Amino acid sequence: MTRSPATSRWTAHDVPDQHGRTVVITGGNTGIGFETAQVLAQRGATVVLACRNPGRAADAQARIASAAPSARVSTLALDLASLASVRRAAETLRADHPCIDVLINNAGGMRRHHNLTEDGFESTLATNHLGPFAFTGLVLETLLATPDSRVVTVSSIGHRRGVINFDDLHSVHRYRNSTAYFQSKLANLMFTYELHRRLTAAGVSTIAVAAHPGNARTEFGREMSAPARAALSPRLRAVTSWLLQSPQMGALPTLRAATDPDVHGGDYYGPPGRAQFTGHPARVESNTRSHDTAAQRRLWQESEQLTGVTYPLPRQPSDPHPPRIDA
Ligand SMILES: NC(=O)c1ccc[n+]([C@@H]2O[C@H](COP(=O)([O-])OP(=O)(O)OC[C@H]3O[C@@H](n4cnc5c(N)ncnc54)[C@H](OP(=O)(O)O)[C@@H]3O)[C@@H](O)[C@H]2O)c1
Image (cartoon, rainbow, N blue to C red; front, top):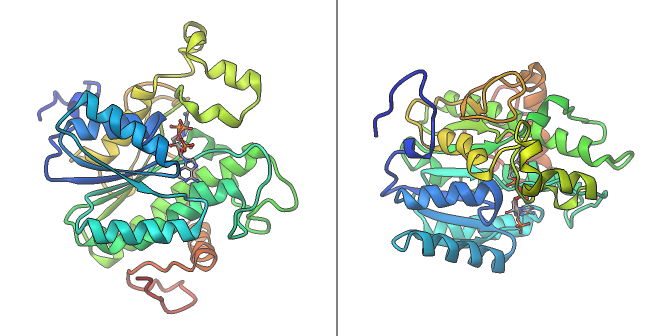
């Protein structure tokens, strides 16, 4: 597919033909994930919707099938807040799909109240970072076996307000839902940049890329206060359109990161401009803190220790222990 260069706006029409490619998308049943999955399926990709709620996953699968009857869409049970579920899902995926061209770590949320998962992780951190870290590591061999594959991780403008609190990663001493969310979204970028460095050092063709949707009207606000939920409602579109865009627009940065041949490892895509709230996707910059390589390495090591998942990549000089390959 050709596109007029430089000044043209990147849209869903710029997604190249995806026949013969397999894309796995977490949280593909609604919001940005659903819109991303729908476009990729319409372009011919084999799409796996990795979702925690089987009913909502089946409903999304049916909606995509009714819009594109020839679409190849399947579902996979995956609760990112449970390491047992992550391991089961990764095992099923590896057994069913010898190739994965793109893994999109899209699922995410913000828990209103402090909650520890069955693994003892703070729930927002578990869903948004530790679960995706483990899932990616457990399917990495399949990605590595697929030429030019990509890991796309969905972050947020909110990363700018994030701090990785290594002294209290699970917010046991103090919990604020926004603080936990911003930490997790900063972690998404640090994970991407550290993974990019490790993939580059290994000399493989798989790349790691990040994206963010700006602000989009999705179900994201489901655990927010009533006024915040009201502000996200499409009914207020006329007054909030400078701040919020449609889920279709919100999916474009992810779609670009996943499919544009000009994307490079370590890139970050989102709406352009200073605020990055709305607009067609372009390469954007994340904040200085996200590029702190010492913090990236420390987060990687903490994530390995917490999840017990070690990536099948050559050891880095900073790694404390020899790698243990999880099968
Ligand atoms: N909307 C925005 O303005 C905005 C801004 C910045 C970044 N983002 C990011 O965009 C991504 C998608 O969010 P969205 O706006 O599309 O929100 P959404 O409409 O609420 O969709 C979130 C998706 O994540 C899934 N999910 C939540 N917890 C999960 C878990 N434990 N295991 C597996 N899946 C889980 C949800 O599944 P269920 O349907 O079963 O709940 C749903 O499919 C998130 O990473 C979010 O942080 C969104």
